[in-house]
Amino acid sequence: MCHCIETIRIEGGRVWQLDYHQRRLDATRRELFPDAGPLDLRDAVPSALPSAGVYRLRVTYAEALERVELEPYRRRTVRTLACVYVDCVDYRFKWADRRELQRLLQQRGDADEIIIVRDGLVTDSSYSNLALFGGNRWVTPDSPLLAGTMRARLLDQRTISEAPVPIEELVHYTHVALINALNPLGALVVPLGAVRL
Picture 1 (cartoon, rainbow, N blue to C red):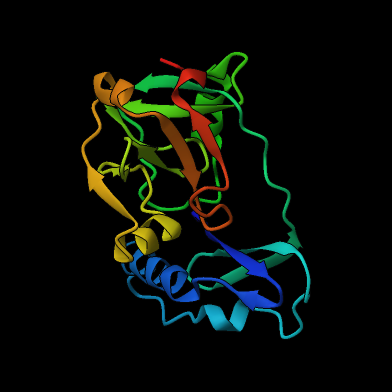
Picture 2 (tube, rainbow, N blue to C red):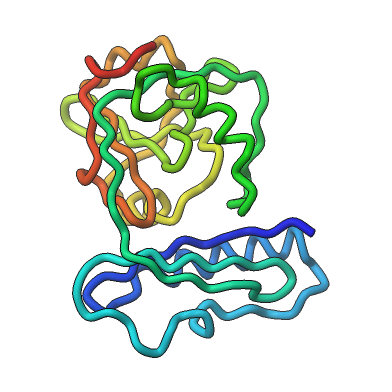
């Protein structure tokens, strides 16, 4: 059986963006487990949350809730990125099994993280969506491997906009931000000069 996950930010005793995670979980379960009953993520949130610090709440599920893990979050250090070119990779759902992404990450050489380029288009890193700064606005690739919850929220707020990003146009941007539920826009930003194309 395939398992999926939701990784949710807990900070200051508060659950962040639960509605976005619920929407993605519902869409995933409709497609993968159409006969399963409803699953409410609020039931996975522990009743007593840490009042200080940032925590990662990892919810593993399939037809039912499988496992809930809460652990302190430590942001990765990402100073350099390397582009990895692939013809096909499918990560429409947030699978618990990340072997395919880990295989791509092994191609990074001495870089800290990768930018996955699929069919000539910039998509995501191995663990986040991307936002690219072009002088006056942030753009996110319109062809992500996974439609992340932070990306969805930033699009809804019109903080970022979507556009196709062919790899040859990456040089028109000055910075690459890695965004996900635990890393809001601005938390992890790499200058384009630190990206190996």
